[in-house]
Image 1 (cartoon, rainbow, N blue to C red):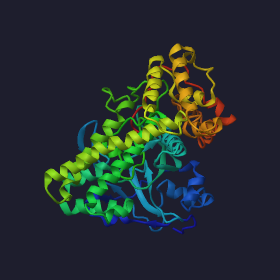
Image 2 (image 1 turned 60 degrees about the horizontal axis):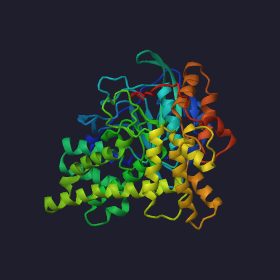
Image 3 (image 1 turned 90 degrees about the vertical axis):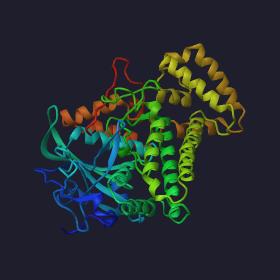
Length: 486
């Protein structure tokens, strides 16, 4: 088809051995219609938004047509799902190409919900509108929060229903990511591929994501270190804003260090470190306070996969990998501690800071304080909306905090600026997400969704527009649950 949109595809992944993918065509849909288009992202990608809204653009975003240069594939990978290893792959996602942006950045363009692939395992390969809008909203909010993430370009309704517990309107999400290489991709290669195929995958990952590391001695150790570093920083950023991924299987952890696969994710309201939202996480494997240890466990699986590639004495090599797993904790701690200092307006680090931070978190846990609203209240010195601010526990801590701030050379204005940059005024609160999705899907009213999305685009603005989204969740909402299947 004629390319008026700006597609500029390359397809480097298909240069890998064919064991890593299957050529597929997206399934055609009956009556595609754009529900929402990310015009700003389209511009960053070098695409023309107005053309994407035309029939030719909608045809690509729905999978009914493929642009010139596309090499449509489904990727193969494996993964530990809740600790159990299994063969997986893109069961309903189709990678239609790697867009080369005007800044020469390479990103995957993937259609999620595009139909059956060889890895569908009996599924229909389709997706429902609500979950696709949910991923669009939360992934774009995460990007605005400054957290590495896949992005959402568009949601297209298919004009067809999908059958889950009930009949639901079908939709396709166009997802953009630095790549979809996963820890599970390496597990797949280690389990079912030849050594030269594993090596090809590792070399490809280095060339695509870490070209400087590719030239260093022990490049596969360097690959592992780069992934460890990115994941440590990512998980710390999740925890700093109260984000719970909900399904940290090894197939949902990327080599690039992006947040990906927004299934049963949520943000904590009350500060409960053991918070679990996923309906199937009955033992709390992926609870809020388990994200760091789970990440280390997952990275150990990557180390196992890379082990055959590293030359030298095996005991020495194992110690190198183990040292980098310990390094994860150090890297995470630095990122988290500095982030918490920023949230409290501490610009000149001191050894006592960690104790002060943990004292606050212990008081918050005791009083079931709202996590995001607490730091917003501290930023604005506005304690009206949570009764626990009147407790002696908090007042004693507040005196210590204010004394700590006085030890700095920064002005109150500088401290306020730092806190506003570190504490979002709003997040995608769970009850608000459900409200706008209900309106969009059941009432065919996308206005509340778009208004909420607009407010989330600059979560650190502290604007009047954000006020109505900033309050803690209603106390009568009960235990919030999320579900897989997005």
